[in-house]
Length: 416
Ligand code: FAD
Image (cartoon, rainbow, N blue to C red; front, top):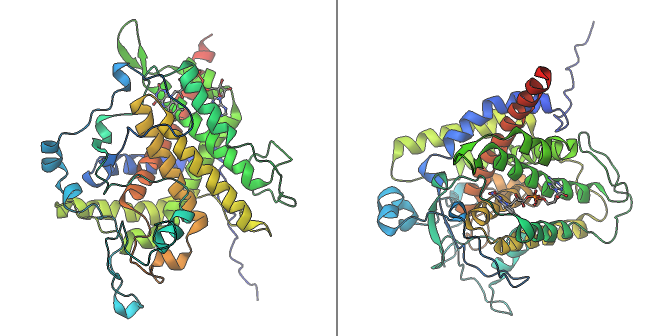
């Protein structure tokens, strides 16, 4: 008798841009709606931290660099939940039946576990080690409330030496000293263009370059024509900064698929533990349903195959190195002297850092809630979740804009 063998589906590869575009046609409208909901549009960020690496003596004075912050009255009306409880994205206490125990005292964010040498409590030190970013603390007294929808990432005029120096510092984080032997396992779809570096380090470079390219796409998609004062698309800007460099285009797809891998892996957490409660139950239920569809059905269709990364004998050392370098990138964001660029730089670096933490730092057991932290400290902060979803939206926009720009440029070419 003939045996029917199920066809093996190879994992989607970020190199398959056509597949990414097709999946994005469904993801973009959904995630673009999600980020308009109260839970995802409001953040509390400190945009006035000093640059820890060099003395900044430039401040972007362009009107378009300014972030519109929310005054207290507006926050109380539009985002009262931000005031009432900054931990709305926290893990719900696990039912005792599942082996959970009530948090052992102390605030979830601050923690009050046993003191460790140096002042930090022990668990916060562990968390510190796991985060790929220096995180914004929405419970801090510092910082301002911002409506991300009111402050779109677009052309601001921030350029020249101040902007170039920040990018230079970020790329410097990519200068790994020692290639790790035996690291060439070549997962499909990842463009390996520096053969002396192991794959993980190349992926790190692709992530930075993909973020840079995505920001450039946004700048060119909403470019200010200084002559007419109109915001307009600028295909030549896209071509010069991104389109002429296939590796930069590809790196946008790599980051997009990394974010989707994180969303797919987080599905059980989003479905069962993320407590969205903005005071509008109907809206919150719709957000929860959309998140479930996004994470459960759509994201797996173009999620990066991360199974071969961080698997070799140097796994831990390599992970530590990548993590500490990415943390430095997040600190460099405080050196961005255009406030709006800083806001979106912080948000997107946190979003990508959260994706790295979810994909490489959290086990499935943790995400499913079968392992509880000793202090009840949340697996992910509200800001991390909000940043992840907003960053996914930005990359979904970039993928959509890349398709549109390429079509526009091809049309122009055909008319010549
Ligand atoms: P830059 O984009 O500054 O690039 C510098 C050099 O890096 C290039 O010459 C090239 O050699 C290399 N490079 C460029 N792209 C890539 C890539 N994808 N991969 C690898 N190498 C690359 N400006 C805005 O108008 N709005 C914003 O919201 C905004 N946000 C920013 C956020 C951050 C974190 C930073 C650091 C800058 C931001 N900027 C923003 C500034 C913007 O990114 C550019 O620096 C600026 O427009 C000047 O561009 P440029 O042509 O000099 O080249």
